[in-house]
Image (tube, rainbow, N blue to C red; front, side):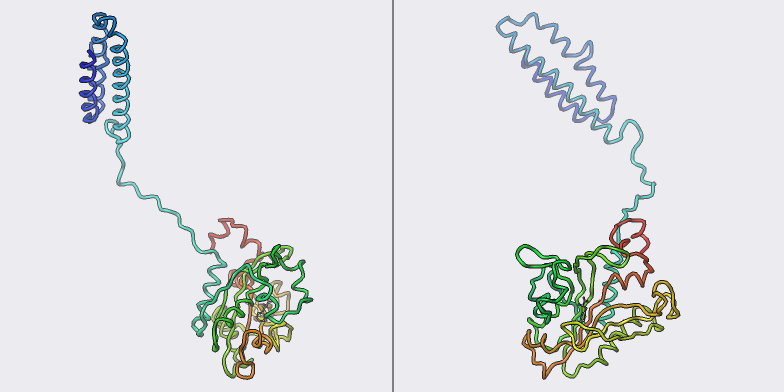
Amino acid sequence: MIEKINQALADAERRAGEAADAAAVEQLRIDYLGRNGLFPAISREMGQVPPEERRETGCAFNAGRGKIQELIENAAARLKAAGSGSGDAIDLTLPGRRWKAGHKHPITMLADECVAVFRRMGFIVAEGPEIEDIYHNFDALNTPADHPSRDPQDTFYFADGRILRTQTSPVQIRVMESHQPPVRIVAPGRVFRRDTPDATHGMNFHQIEGLYVDRGVSMADLKSVLQTFATEMYGPKVKIRLRPHFFPFTEPSVEYDFSCIMCGGKGCPVCKHSGWIEIAGAGMVDPAVFANVGYDPEEWTGFAFGMGIERLAMLRYRIPDLRLLYENDVRFLEQF
Ligand code: PHE
């Protein structure tokens, strides 16, 4: 009897595998489990099994019937998944669903654009760490220990004394430490300051730093590079203006403005009716900085500048509030 059950199982397994439609599966059920099927017939013969074999035979019978039920269910599920029998196969004529790919963030787009402009002027891209040491962020940049920018109220300090860089200027130092002049680099990147966020300030923002060191570099070269940058980014009508300023690592130092891109210099709320928009700081590299990296200040001169990328993006895309750039609202980001 056990022999018979095993044989039935093997046959059923083969037929379940071969079943090509719902009717074949139903026939399988009828043949094995239906009223006149094999298993009910075996069940009726059970009485003739000698009592000492009955236990073992009963077990085989139950296991076999369970197994056949499983085979039938699996075969039915397989057919359903394939869509056969019900007639609703995949409609190949339907248009596909397009995968919605994102795009670069406006900050990244603008940084890329700046880099492209500077590359055309012969600058290459340099990078430095966002977690910086005090030497590269301040000391090597000729910034004294009591300078207000070093205050923990303005700078994020780690317990081990390192900091989140407050500017991209430490990249100047890292480049000059590892390369001999001439040097012509731009360094875009993220910087951090303990500011209270408002429409024009954030705790982290982006700068693009520039450094040009060679023989006989002058302020005129700085001006022409900045003017070329302004024209390339915002069109031929934009003028630049330099104002005296102070940075520990440049001498002389300037802040520079672009004529207002919104009103063309006539005066509007964006430029606070002055006709000019402050863009960044710049200056001639201080000889003390050259001394810190082992360049001879008698032989080499250079200029450096650093501008805020958010500021440039706000002007370019007419974004009224810097915080919009960080909220990651897709309705905002989709516009670029
Ligand atoms: N690092 C300065 C700042 O963050 C900007 C700057 C860079 C000024 C290079 C001069 C030269 O304000």
